[in-house]
Length: 309
Image 1 (cartoon, rainbow, N blue to C red):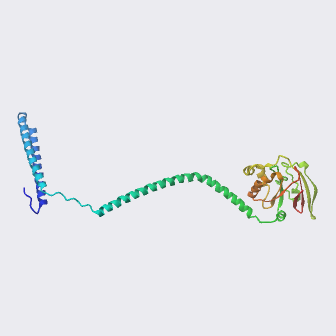
Image 2 (cartoon, one colour):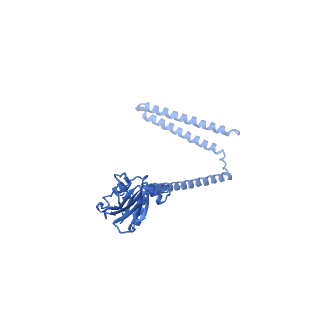
Image 3 (cartoon, rainbow, N blue to C red):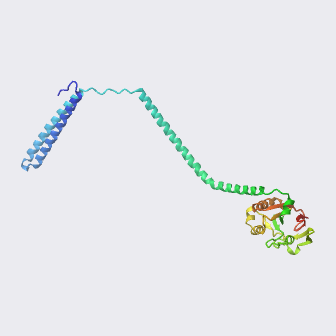
């Protein structure tokens, strides 16, 4: 077999075709021999085996010869030239690997930041409840402050002339409403001696001076407090939940009535709590210190204005 000078590729293809045809012929002959061996009788069984063995040896010899020829033919072709590694390609590859590493590092950083964010969100969700309660408390305090600041700024005299004064004595950290206006008398003078039997000893209450006519108002009241029976001022929440306190406020009208506090020296500190609850309920109030000895409370009214004695 000879290779053409200008057609080395074509000669190689012809050689491969020849080898393929030869393999096909060998396989076909082997199949025929096998079929003959299977269909022959027992009398010729040994001779058929000899024929098949002889044919197999012949085919193997031809295969070895063909393989040797193929090796000789392939040896004539030069080896593939070494591929020169381009410096730019190396640099591009290096940059690409560096970019991959950088992005992997970024992914790790993002994953770490995401995990921290999730942890922070969990912590924030745990704090939402207390924060909401604190906001509600602040809102309530702001509403109370706005309610107090939105009232008309009038002097005590102007306020008392415009509203009915409901007197509460603050003594031993207890509240003693001296009157009960559940059933309000239409006569404002008679209302001043509608004693609250729950908090005062009605049988020991009197009005030694009681002038109430067109010429003016001049009333003196002497009221015996029922010691220990007053509404306790333990805390704002307890006061707000106290049935006697809420029932007392229910008998009053913020648009018509003003609460006048007479505060004994032993109850100055606790008075602030009562004041906040009164403001929360929407009432105006005034406050005066009461330094006389209790439980006997004495006051006088001149032209609708109360004065402690």
